[in-house]
Image (cartoon, rainbow, N blue to C red; front, top):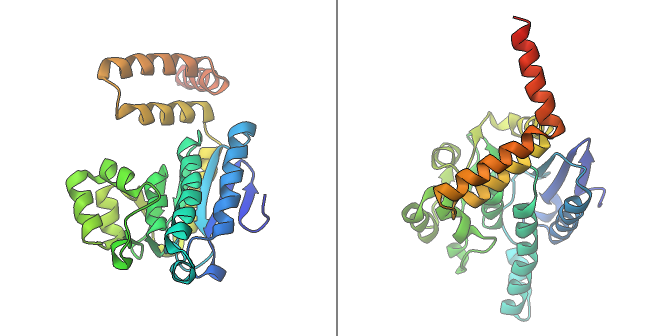
Length: 255
């Protein structure tokens, strides 16, 4: 694990995806390190939550456009950057534990794509989301054209992407892109507290919840009900499920 960009805090894996030294743009080394860390986590399963954050003034302002401009073969370079970024998106999407994002300042381009693939995104009144791609003559990457319509609906996604619309924190909350708003100065602390709370929670239940939600978009109700029954039965015999049910009964008996 890279000491600066990927950190372990108890059962929370924190990944810095943009750094102040890189001007808040997507950090290529950070992308690689986070992808490796998440892939390793899938095997070792030590963490109960993943936290995506940035140490700069913004969550992530997108790709390094200056590097795009300097590339000898722009098409080949931008394509390679996108494919590497997509390895990270896939790793996040496959992560079985909750993924929380601390979205302060701007989340533009790749930053907005990251927000849309997380489970819980926490922002503030000063948070701003923007696709950013049309402004430099590009189409989206990072799965944004896939995740966004699933969050806000296809008609609204067309409006946001085609007009390169800037969404305020309040608008992003109303659209479902952010899960909650807190004062700007509390975003990092709230995201960390949420990650720590989830990491201390019933990991097996969270894994089943994420799996069920992932299947809900393409399963028939009957199929999904069967999956829910199988899932809740598995949770009932897990250590957390047994402890949770027994603790509930004990509390009720003590009244």
